[in-house]
Image 1 (cartoon, helix red, strand yellow):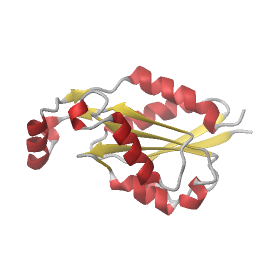
Image 2: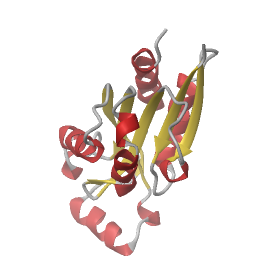
Image 3: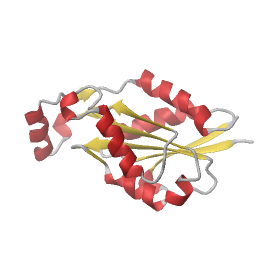
Length: 168
C-alpha cells in the first residue's frame, strides 16, 4: 500500500518552498507518494497519512500562515504523524535568536499538534530584496545576508523522518 505524505509550507520569498521541495524529493519513493504545496493552497488533508509542515521565521516570529494552517486542520493533524521545520538565520547568526527559541516559537504556532520531529534550517537572506524597515533592522543587528541553506543537512533530516512518518 502506498502512503501519501503532504509537505505543506509557508513562504515569503521562496527559500522555504525550495527546502520543502527538497524534503519532498527525499521522502518520495515507490512506497511514498508526496505532494508539496503552499499551505494557502491546501483545501483538505483527506487521504494523507502524514504531514510535514515548514515555515520561515521573520523578525523573531513564525510566519502566521503556519499557525492558521495548524488551527484549521488541528483535529486531523493531531491524528497523523507530523514533522515540522522552521527556516531562519538563527543557526548561523545567534544575534538573530537562538535555535532553541525558534523551536519553541514553532511549537507554539503548531499547538496542539505535537511533531514527531522538529528542526531549524539555516535559510537565505537576500538583504536587497527586503523592505526598507527590514533592511534597517538587519543592518542594526549586523545580520549577514546570503544563502546559508545546507542541502546535505536538509536531505539527512528528510531521510531521518521518513520512518517516523511512514509505517513500513
